[in-house]
Image (cartoon, rainbow, N blue to C red):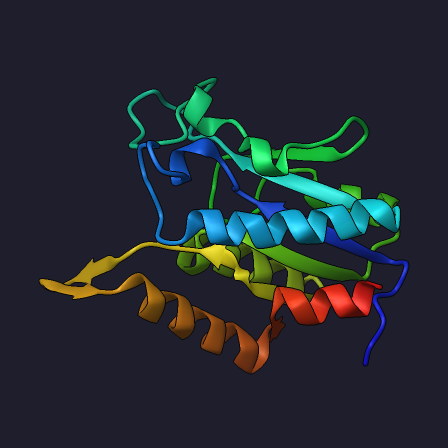
Amino acid sequence: MTQVQPNTALLLIDFQNDYFPGGKWELTNTQRAADNGTKLLAAFRQKQLPVIHVRHEFETDEAPFFTPGSQGAAIHSSVAPHSGEVVVLKHAANSFKETNLKQVLEALNIDNLIVAGAMSHMCIDAGVRAAADLGYNVTVAEDACATRDQEFNGITIPAEQVHASFMAALGFAYARIDSTETLLNEIK
């Protein structure tokens, strides 16, 4: 069993209210993903390892969700940041694009990231690829990520297939893909 190194941070991406039941852009299995994210968050806090929250807001009120300053754009209470935990605000799918995330990671001397959040096919994909391209060792807690059905040329692709496809692609060249349970055992 591998052990999580001290230079590892937990990166929680877009666990925001609009993705939960009653939100403007509800995802499939969001609560399950957040429950697993909460377990990882508790383990990181217990070990006093760095936690970074990433929050997305679109730059206009005309956005379909995550409108500026809205309750829907707020981080969900189940994974809400504690005092001293960094919150990075982004306006694009890639958590590194025009944000201070790279500087935050450098200041914390981080080499390894464990990633959880939403959406598997969008912001998780973009953030993981960018992190790997920047030289970070990335692990995705696949059961702590969520997405929703997608449509292409009149065909609906179920969320579970969307998620599996993106995890398979990330696992091929960009990240280690594993379960929350396995990662929790490594953190202990």
